[in-house]
Length: 166
Image (cartoon, rainbow, N blue to C red; front, side):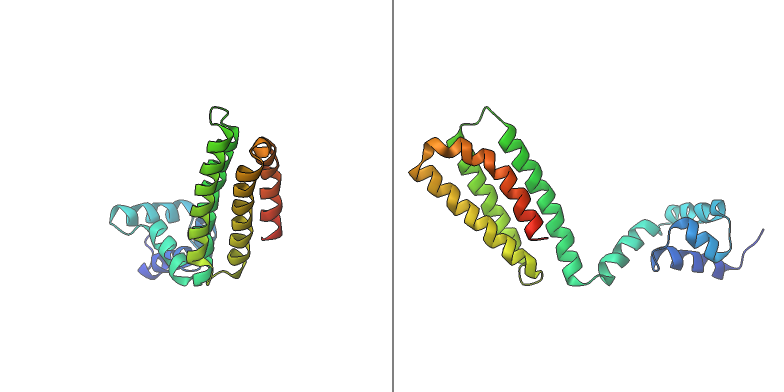
C-alpha cells in the first residue's frame, strides 16, 4: 500500500520530537508497527538515524539543569563503582585507601564545582563530601588506628549523604 509522504514525516515527528514509542508513533500515524519499523530502518540506512535525532532533540530541548544532572549522574555512578572497588579491595593498606579516597573526593568536588551554579543541590553535596574528606584526613593524622573503623562506617555515611541531598 502506498502512503502519502506526509505520513512518514508525521511518524518521524511523533517518534523524534514528541518522544513517543515507535508503537505509539505508528498508531498515531495510522500505520502498522511493521511499516513504522521498516521506515525507521530505511531512514537509518539512508543516513537519517532517528535514535540519534531523538537524543539530540532531548539534549537540545532539555533545560541546562537537566543536562547537568545527567552528566553528574554519570559521574556519580562511576564514583560509586570506584568507591565500592576501593572499599572491597583488601590488598590496599588502610593509609593508602584514605589517600585514594581523598583523591576520589577531590575529583568529586571538582565535578560538582563545575555544576554547582546550575544545580543548587550539588553545592550542598559537595560541601558534605569535603567535610568527609577533611574528617578522613583528621582520622589519618590523629588516630590512624581508627582508619579501618572509619572506612567501615563510610559506606553507611555515603548512603545517608546521598539520601539527604537528593
